[in-house]
Length: 323
Image (cartoon, one colour):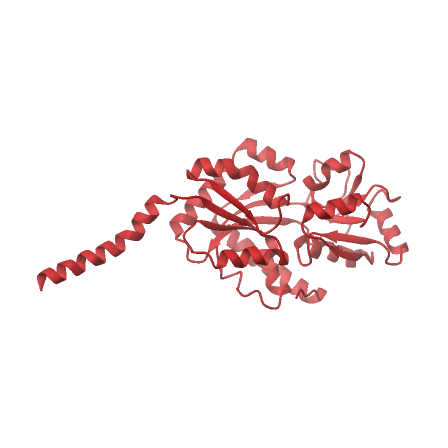
């Protein structure tokens, strides 16, 4: 009887020690980060900038997998179904964690419950860019041209329901432009369409259009940040234009499947945070038009909750629905 009890005790102790041993060895294989948008998108560029630093700090390769489509829901759904062991993560934009639940009839998961927040990486102040072929040279002149066009002008977005689409549509309605919405698949496609004058305006991160502005192909007419951007010091903010109530920035964050061990989540957070604190990385991010955020897992959780509280009523009022 004693032998049986002893064996049972050993088995119980082994069962308790196994997870601890696994955590101590983590990571012992490559870590996959699924990006909710295509290569060349802002979040993808940010992650690739950080990938070498992640590999150095975690001791394992970082595999980046782009799974675009359905406003990032394809990637998000994939990660919710992954094993919660820290080897599969999601890099998504604000809408993937906060707004999509109000846009789509059935996501198949609750974004507020399906993930373990890891860290907010960057905030991307939005800029309204127009084609330089237009006669309009600033916000006021573009507004006059849009109203006079009788609905013949259009704006593009990286997809229906994405933050650039929602914010641009809010501005479109508030300014009375009457622009048509043309959705594309990712921000690189919207820039190409704007350069070709297929559309007349986009809302995108500063880094997306900066070089084209310098080349004289695009113009910046407004910025969505709280203060003017150093890249466009002469361009007014939405607040200066009377549109300060519109949330026009986009943040990107990393999350793991629900149930991922807290120790693993914290090690991931620390690795990302250390890279974000690097002055060289900060400057590189700035050149991409992105501002480092960082903070703790709780900070990202609060950010998600605040965005959900903002976008829920706004989307309902706008009447935007995606099948």
